[in-house]
Image 1 (cartoon, rainbow, N blue to C red):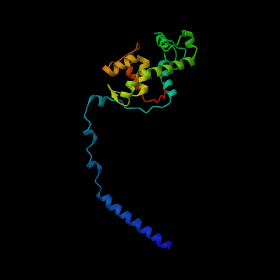
Image 2 (image 1 turned 120 degrees about the vertical axis):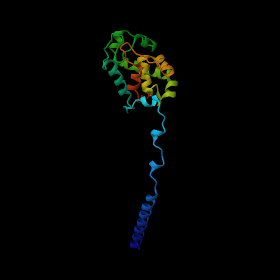
Image 3 (image 1 turned 180 degrees about the vertical axis):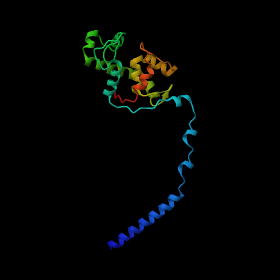
Image 4 (image 1 turned 90 degrees about the horizontal axis):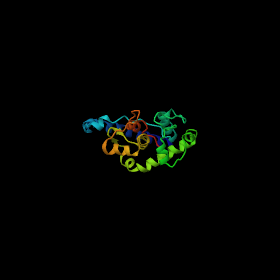
Length: 195
């Protein structure tokens, strides 16, 4: 009985394989059915100039370290020629706007305070720019691929108002050293901040 069942299974397998070979011969290559994509997509400048999207780490801390590296080489005690302070190069107006009433020395000598101030700024900017994040995240605008972390990095460099001007009018902000706001959008885009 077992031998008969094995023979039956083998016959079914042979029949299936021969039927599949015949079926495979009737398949039409997909390339003959579908028009190549390059002839479908219209050539427009934003499409051609869109940057290649780099996969970034998803860690909040990696984002902070990347920003800190760009701003100050991750040094908490740095003050630049314009008076911006610490790892993230905070201005005194920004700190006051966030509710921090500390002296320059207190700020520079307190890494925990600087980290908390950066977290508070990111949360504040996310709340104020939520409409733009929701509307543009995952899209290419003025040649820049938009992500939440890129928007928040740009707001850190240029302020919320300049980020809004970028989306509304294509405005390009540059800081005193000539750093473009859009360079922050690109360089720091793609992080998952979870804030």
